[in-house]
Image (cartoon, helix red, strand yellow):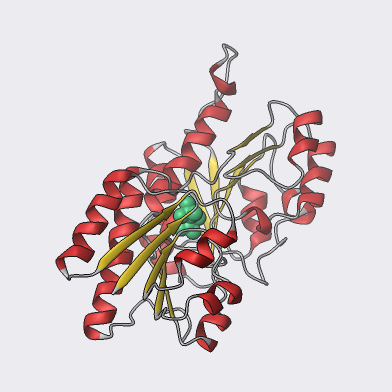
Length: 306
Ligand code: 3PG
């Protein structure tokens, strides 16, 4: 079988080597398309692929039309808002993700941004410490759990809100459960977002919630920029000079932040959360193994389009 790895943002070379070991061992052929510049390149590369591994790359109906032999696509990562699942089903393509494989990297990036911001960008001024501060995890999935572990190491008080996780499971993880988002945002100087982008969550974090946050509020977004209602965020920024926003990828209104609110934000230019060798190896190998196993045994454990 031909397995195509199509990543606009490439995996680390060591991850590709290890991923290739997995596919070679089963006699499959691995093809690579990295840093492609437009859809045309991708459409031609998928034409004869039986399986596809992507990251945040868009898997659209147009791509599936072009991928005549495709049987399975695996998103090497957690969030699958880039996959058109209905189109996958219509084209008889199994869609999977690799949950949990890059979560630690994302959690570490959240703390890297928090520490850099707390120390004023290491430019000589007195900063602040994380110890003793409250952090609120908006959703408590794989990344949320790593966040809680790291936060406890820093001596922070950890709160979480997640309607899909039992209070008991949060307790076992040393996290105080909040009964709603209002409670979470009112209690926590730091709030970190960890929910997927979908019709329910898009623009769900806006003025009303953000205005509840205590003094020196810091909103950390390593999830998806679409979750935050930027209009509401900009309104808070205008009203509260003590408010900061740390985001893994630039918001649409980046120019306004740059013009008016220097020193109150950190935006990565490219999505960096999962961009470590370890995360690339974990997610890349998991994707390759899931494909190999699907062809061999029909295992659909991580199937998303049921
Ligand atoms: C994910 O959903 O797994 C992360 O956002 C990582 O995305 P990436 O693979 O595009 O870096």
